View 1 (cartoon, one colour):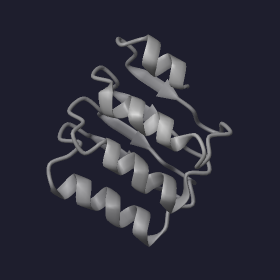
View 2: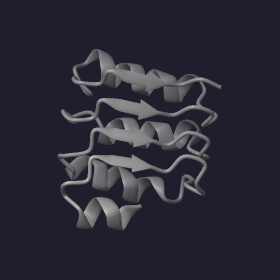
View 3: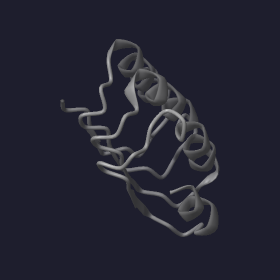
View 4: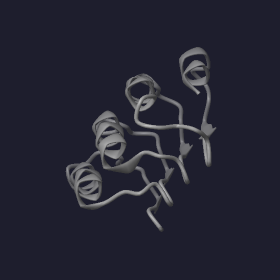
Length: 104
């Protein structure tokens, strides 16, 4: 995951659905996402992000201008994680986002 973003600046899709991604890996992913300028699809469904990981991810995506699809389905996101995502969306972050999946 992190090597794909760090070593492939042209990567447009990152699918980590049902991976072992958990809170321990999120800071590295968030750091890579903040710098990556080509990613258009990020799929993290059925990972263990929970609120803490979602908050870190949302902060990294505040300045993102390329992501069009973000899938966070079944990531155990509750009120604080959803609130942080909403804040990013309402302040102009993820400006080109067309699809956001938060289904349980």
